[in-house]
Length: 327
Image (cartoon, rainbow, N blue to C red):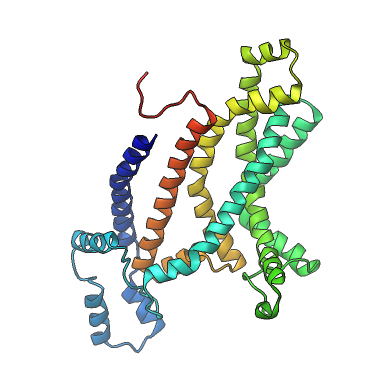
């Protein structure tokens, strides 16, 4: 297993380089440039200042030279300096925003797994029943409704009409005066809507996949053999069947990480959460190349690690899988 993990980590290096190369080319070929944005922010800027800005950030050099220079810095964990007016190091800006995005995505993924897996298992066990049809209708409504529209609707209803939940930001104005548990509850209140909407939109795919996988396992011969031995249905369902149905579900979880990270851009922008998604949106609008590339690199690393964790989990769920061994 350790040898397999080491090989996978080594294989991530060329994959990461390829991702950064394509991203760097696409970003720099997109319409608009930082100098144009700088001129819009300050129409009185002189030509000397523009030339100094271009030279400072090597925007006058060929694309491949700029990429190689950027790659040399990234190896040293130096993502450069932001084009924004604060001129902060990109790594510092990401460090300030990354914990919020990780919290939102991890919480959403855990809730999706905790809710969708039992729904899928029970839907498979009670196939074609009223419960199965009701769950199917519920999850596909969540899949069909645009998340940004649902977010605005929930903000208006729960935040404006009922006044139960805040609709913007991560903290209240009196956050510093609250007790320790009051601060925790305040942050939870600000994130209930974005996490809840993210979970509602992500239930359909995983619950349906869990249902289909469970249906296949329930028709296997070893399930019939377990029933013939008189084992309780709960033990058959949640110990024997579920364990074998988890493998394809783990694959879906590993592949869902990029979608959750991408969804952070929408939720953090709508709800005004100071996470990496909001920073990415602001950076794109400002043509802040260093910050955009820094966020893409972090997102790519998290995605590759998530896929590696999913592969390792295969061996934990199914002892028959032994990486690095033939036959």
